[in-house]
Length: 446
Image 1 (cartoon, rainbow, N blue to C red):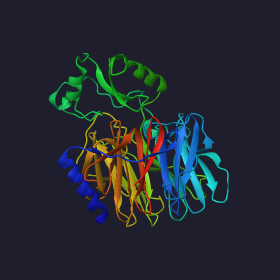
Image 2: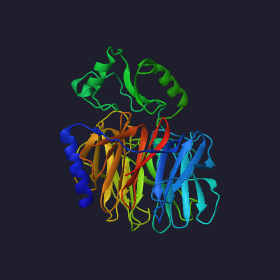
Image 3: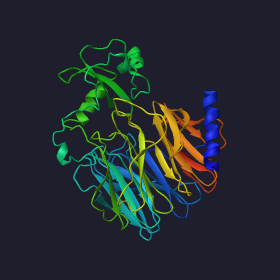
Image 4: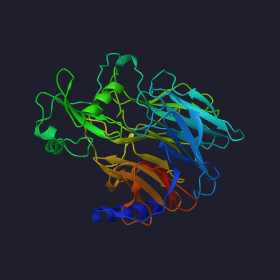
């Protein structure tokens, strides 16, 4: 396929060069504030961007193919709005309605709606039908051509056979600091093996278990816990103490993929539906799921599974409006057995031909794959986003503090800025790239 041939050739060349290049690019500032932006297009190819700032949700739009954007306007407030680790507002648009969703720190999923003929947004309306069941605050939203909206999220409700869940504030901590050769060769969320991590840490405390937690700046940090549950040594003890405070009393989640439908523009939502539950009891609970609709209304959901410790990206499809889903299929040929959550869900889209296109991270490397096809390695990084039109495919991702881009004119990944939360959407000709820096929310038209 031409779309994939162009980008795959660029990716292979990039890998063979084993380097990236910088390009002088002209970027513009959408807003001097904000975090966790997401974007979409309406049926007239107008672009809409939503993002959060403290407990407010903002919207900006472009009606000139991304040349300029409106001043960001506040459309909603949500007490405890959660922003971070790919969690933030989402937007989807149908012929008659625009819907925005977001989650709060209590673990509830809300929506706001606006009719195309109206000026004001209405909401919030709760999406999840069990209070605080969206405890991992990770979800996504899409609209189908027939005007329906579908929200997907990681649900942490306790099912009858999970009543004996034990409290645990760390994600998948090992019982004791690994010592065997096999344990030392396992990968960590840092993209290196336990052995390599130990070499960086130096002295390893005896009779402790290695764990990982999320810092406030979205970094994944290590910590060693003793038999009494106390931190003995940490990458950043102050950050760990803040993490413990944020998660006080939290029960170790049993994350499952849930779905809800709105056929009235987000004004009401259907009973929450279980889409998938791992045979291990929980999918990878800290990685954002994604949902996309094809031109014929078929739904695709992508999520990071957890089967026997292997945390690989899977997808499942529905051709009956979400009433039933296919057995999940693994993406890519490689695999990743890791005793921690990577906190990275990847990007998903379905092109006009109905081809499922994905990007995701494994062991600190970004890969691209279409359903049923071989994966293609792009470069070192995380948090990728993908978009495609009839001619080309565009990918953006974060590599440390650098924002990287790979498009049809690139023979290797290109640094386009610094920051986090990269996103991309195609235009009539080219694409619009978006990311967050210290200056605010940046965009670049190519």
